[in-house]
Image (cartoon, rainbow, N blue to C red; front, side, top):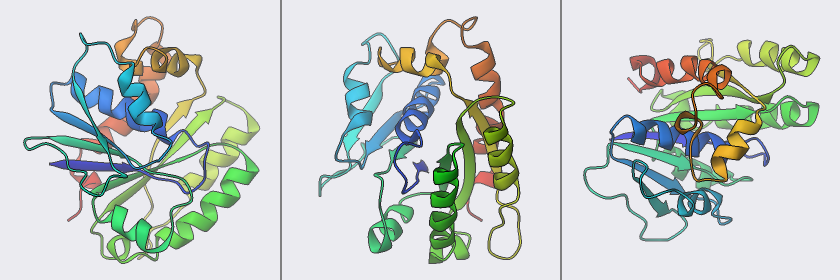
Length: 218
């Protein structure tokens, strides 16, 4: 079972959008997919409630419940984390994941918050011992803007324990296509290709990295 956690302690970074679109991608590829929502706001589950019955099924799991479990036979589990998670709760959530994606948006406040969070994350035992793979995603970017360039420079310079470069998996643009898709319970991959061509191009690097051995623990 493949487990992917979308994580950032800062709110407003697009965690739920990233998680929902990943779930839609894997379901669309024919995989039995579960979307586990650990946020009490239930935004990911609200998105699932809008999902048309004729689209590939995504199983919703309310992760805040003590007895939350994904069904047997699930191939991909996408986990949407809450903001402001720290300490043992953070370690517990990391213990459920093989891969962690950290979305960061281009603002000075978010860059500062990301720096503090990444410092904490890189001290967690599972990360130190390579039991979970971590990558960043530049999210909601405006192409060729100064803020985007600053974010890209920051993310490409991050290092993991031992001096290895932290993977910078993708840069996803600030597009209304995500909003329009979400309003219908869909992913970006499920609306007219001609409308989302540029958005889909920007997902290529992330999907290739997730499909590689580099995104899995050794």
